Image (cartoon, rainbow, N blue to C red; front, top):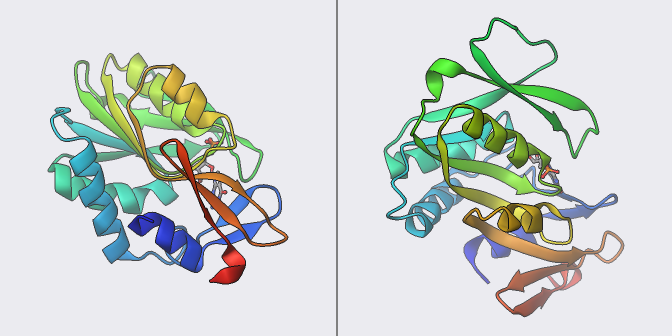
Length: 204
Ligand code: 5GP
């Protein structure tokens, strides 16, 4: 097991509705030593990709992307979620359906913070259906910039986002990929290349 998988087994909680709760180390309380390890791992996996900037989405992406940005020595921009949009032509806007809340948000980035030709690394905490990432990708494209790669903390491999994004040809690096999980037994099954590594939340 890698460090991310170990931490999910130790502190993650499987909830009904295909939701993994990781609020003790990622989504509410934040374990900065873990974030540091994540940043270091992404910098290793995206070495040589010429990353100029990191783009994430508020709120949960900001902490992990901040620490990652220290390893890449590049600025971090976070897309803001907003109900209303300021239609002054100075912002890039994408519509994103929230997996956890089911609502649709506009996500916006000021044009001055993304420039044509920049190599942008996208970072986010979870990948489920891929809506958040597709919103960020469309903003990068609208800016005339390029997606250098995508770093995800936890991919839920049983939901379609990972497949969709890989089929689009992007270099997607998830630190943990969950193949399935069971909210009744607490079991979590990880994917590891072609092999499945199986761990039971009940046997912790
Ligand atoms: P997607 O847009 O890929 O469907 O969902 C990604 C977003 O939904 C992430 O940014 C994350 O905030 C949230 N999310 C999706 N699945 C989970 C989950 O199982 N647990 C938590 N805590 N957040 C999730």
